Length: 494
Image 1 (cartoon, rainbow, N blue to C red):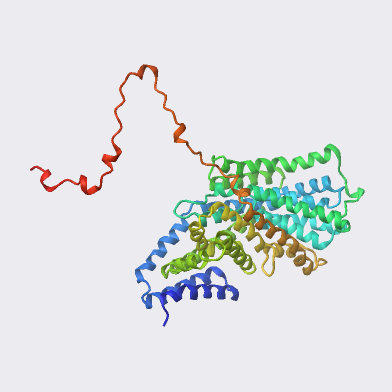
Image 2 (cartoon, rainbow, N blue to C red; image 1 turned 120 degrees about the vertical axis):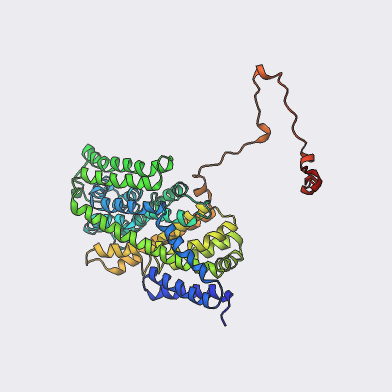
């Protein structure tokens, strides 16, 4: 006989099985949730009226203003992917760093960080950089494992650099009872790790240039066609519009001038303006951007609905309490919890993308993090760094899929997959850094002003010094038990 205590582990096991089968996660989650609800109602674990909450929860998802920013940022990334901005940035910085070993690698990393700050989507960054820089790296003798790895990793860092779609989704899923993580705080907290991770990638490239210079040769003189002011002009032509768009999108959010949805709308308009400046603004371009936005937005909404059906039933059979007891009693306290969660998320990333992990797993982990008094912004940024690996390792590393799709047949798939391994290791090192150095995230957050009551002074104007001040009430007298001050029945007069 199935008891209510058996339902949470059975539902969780069913979730793992349907994810491994490979059927679309959104529909699998909804089907599993509805089947579990039928079983729970039949066995009397909760009444049928409990399921009537489902339409209200779905309506709450569809009316969430924060999630409205996702199509705006997706459209912005789709337009910037094809408007020529990445091409100008890569060619200019490639010429600038070309004379030194690993110069093209440095250019790809720096441009990846810039594109991450203006597109917010991994696909746009990986595809744009792969199309432009991979043929050049092949032509001038770069090691293919390094070349494919640096392009995939530099595109994946988009997931961490604000205004990242992942940070928006995590902020929404970690907001418990109106407290915890908002998008602006998540963006602020991600600034430090973004800088450190970019530096790690650059240091790795420097190490390759020193230890294996034949892997990353400098560009020959005949390939460096520009120099002096002409070269700087090209670099600035790519940099200045990017900086303006970064301020338009990210600066307005951090300064409190715009909500993420408003900033996303401004970014979409800014992307169209940049496309017009590069003389690429055409109806086919806009149509492609709209189609890409429609597909991604529909996928997100269906995954959200499916995860809502599952989580409603899961909470109805006390699944939240089961997860809490399971994770809060791990040895090692907070550190044990963080290590277990990050290992769990890392292995889930072999089979799921970040949307599925965020919508399915994060709502189950957030209450435990709150109970352990873990800063939710720091927790969200930490998970964001970890979930970068979902794009990088097989079998479902989407950055590797994008790269395989645009790479020539001369490049072996084994080079793409093996080339990703060192960069995944660097991402896991970044996870360890954030765990043992929380200040890398929290020091960027707005600090609450603390008021020292002992140092507060009330200045009385000179013309009011002689005015008598009424005495303060006697606290001891007013703090008597309620029964002492309770009026008797005889105290009321007709």
